[in-house]
Each structure stands twice: as C-alpha cells, then as structure tokens.
Image (spheres, rainbow, N blue to C red):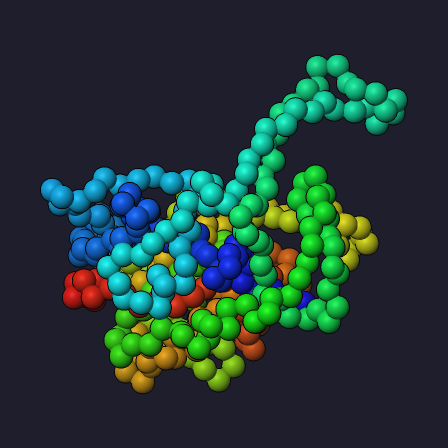
Amino acid sequence: LKIGFNGLWLDDGPYFPLPLDVHLTEQENGLTAKPLTLRKTPAASFPLPYLPCFETTADEPKSKKVHNAYLSQSYLIHKDSCWPALDINENYVYTEAKLGIAIDPQSGTAQDERIYQINTVRPVNGLRLAADITGITDAPSVVHLGGEGKLAAVGKAQDPPLSFQAAQAPTSDNRYFKLYFATPAIFKNGWLPSWIDPDDFTGRFGYKKHTISVKLLSACVGRKILCGGFGYDGTDGRHKPREMRYAVPAGSVYYFELTDKRDSFADAVRLFHQKCLSDYREGLGFDYQVFDRSRYCDRGFGYALVGQLTKEQEDVL
C-alpha cells in the first residue's frame, strides 16, 4: 500500500492548503493570493540568504486572515502575480456544535459531571476527500469515517487523480525552483530535510540512478504540528497508538537553487514533483532509517509539488 496525494477535491480537481509564501487580500471577485517578495538578508539575522517578505503600497488592499484557505494547481503551474483562493469554511464546510455526556462502561448509565461539547464537521457543496493510492485491488464501497464513524461512500475518480498535473508539470530553463508541501512532512532535523547540510544548506538528493544537487535559499515554514496515528505493532501483536512526532505543516514552501550545471529544472520535477519526501518509512516506524534504494516515504507524509518562482522573485536572485 502506497499513499501519495491526500486532501480536498472539488469538481475541477484537487485544492491545496494555502502556501505560506503568499498573502491573502479581499478583491471584488473574491479572495486573491499574492506572492511574497524575496530580499537578501544578513546571515546574522536569518540563517538563509534570502528572507520572504510582504511589501505594501498605498493602494494595496489590506491583507485578510482566513483560517482555512485553499488554492488550485494554478499556483504551481503558472508564474502569475496572483491566484484565486477559496475559503473552505465559508462555502464548503458545515460545522455544528453538539453536546454529549460520558457513559459509565460498567453500568451503562450517564456519569455525573461528565457533560462535554464537540464540533462536528461535514463537507457540503461537492467537497470531497481524495487520496492517490496504489496497492489496492478492490476498495470497499462504504467505510466508517471520522471520530463518530459516519458512513461515507468510496468511489474511484473517472480520471486518475492529478493526472493533469503530470501532463502540465511546470517547466522552466531557470536554475531556481520551489518545493511546496501539500501534506505535513516529518524531517529528522526538525524543519530541515536530512539531505540538506545544516551548516551551508547545500545537499544532494538521490533516487536510484538519479541525483540532484541544490542549495536552500529561503523557506516559509509554519509552526510545527504533531503527527501520529494508530496501527498494528508486530512486537506484541496489538493495535495501539503510534509515537507522536513533530512535523512541518502543510503549506510550507522551500526555495532552491540548482548548484550542478548538469542538473536542470526538469530533473527537479522528475525527482520531487508528486513525491512524498518525509525522512522516514512507515514500515520502520519513526526511526528515520533511509534506504539507499529509496529516499521516499510511502504513507502520504511530505507530499511535494515543484513550482516556478515568479518573475519578481527570480529577478532578486
């Protein structure tokens, strides 16, 4: 079983958590995401050579904070100066507060002073959950989903998920690219992948006979989150909670420069685009062991997409 992309899906395809290298503004036609600029920064104040920043003008609309904004794939494929964004909470998610009371497992009656409130979330207006999975020959048609075990119908997309992205993968003759993480990524060195040297931020990533040399120029990384799970433990033959680990949140973006003249933007797409780049493999737990034959994760953590920099960002570099 291998899991790739996993996230939200609308009629026109997948939508991705708001990248952290953009800011939102409210326009007449809805939410608009605009890219941050890059500025050279002294090494003493920031470990990386470039710092993402937001420069305002007198006629610039005020930034808008949205808790659950998403973008389509146009953010990665096109070098535009802005992209339309969706507020998922506004039109596609219904939230309802419910009251409950704890039950005594021995007597089956309600426990005193054990009342609680939870928020339930239900997708509406065509919002669906999607996952790109290989290794399953016969998927169930109905499953229990969520904390309350609600019934959910399972169906196969008419077109393979993200097939259009393989056909429309970004292309460029430039020496720069960015990695956008659509799902949380677990790295051995905190926010930094294990294949990047923490001293000079250079690294070499390899898979089988393909390798690429890069230098990390800048990063937009969100506040760390906790990731865990629940599964079978072969040591004692029981299903139990997995160990919790800190993870880089979805929406984090890393800017890279190709340092080997033999490498190209196409090589970055081949090695990174639509790949899971977490520094661990599920079969070995969270011990961060890396196989020589594979640097990829197979459980959907760190699902990465390659994107182009905007013209303004490239001009700074």
